[in-house]
Length: 289
Ligand code: BEZ
Ligand code: FE
Image 1 (cartoon, protein in one colour):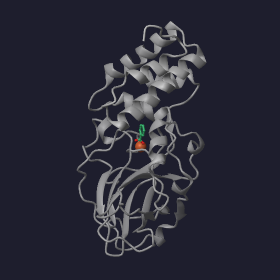
Image 2 (cartoon, helix red, strand yellow; image 1 turned 30 degrees about the vertical axis):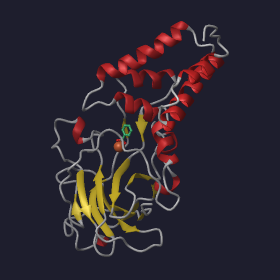
Image 3 (tube, helix red, strand yellow; image 1 turned 45 degrees about the vertical axis):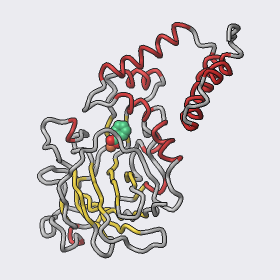
Image 4 (cartoon, helix red, strand yellow; image 1 turned 180 degrees about the vertical axis):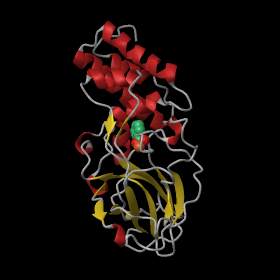
């Protein structure tokens, strides 16, 4: 095409794509370019703004590393990661939520009733529940990979003071689908805001806080893996999670119970002298199709 104009450039781009290309690639790339062109036309994007966008991408690339995934973080704070999660979550299952960049694979086994807080102080939280199929039957041998920050708001992978698997555990549920463990009540924390993503947050007048949460990856043979997290209903950031991870079925009441009611059969049984918190979070997995 010799006569490319601002009005026909999108169609020209589509025409340049080979008929041999993969249909899905054509659909996704074509839609991306169509939306980018419409975006530039709608906003009358200037050269300076285009350059600022390129500088943002370069800034993300400059600090991208094994421990710092600035592009993923950008997707998280722009709502794209959560939108993709929701587009592919199953109506039959507990809601999914963001994985985040801080999960460490290979967590040590955490026996049913085990303790994840170890020597750390803070309000004791007993979390328990049952993993079920969509008909409500327990799923024996499901695994739950659990992780959270230490009370200082940092994940093990961000904090040289913590062991590799601090506040990480892998629990295999019993024949009754039941899991249970103790930890400290998670705290709210900030996502990294010292890079280009922080600049975006500040430009939007937004803060970098996430409401406190416990992350779970629940897996079982024949079922779709579920990446999710649970939140406490009293958290001040519940209605303004900077990565858009909150879903109503993931917001739980952490009930305060007297020490005398702490159950037997837990690693911390007999050691609890203060009131503790209790949460029940049952998980439903969707069948693989
Ligand atoms: C997290 O919950 O660990 C997280 C999620 C998205 C971005 C940063 C952290
Ligand atoms: Fe998190």
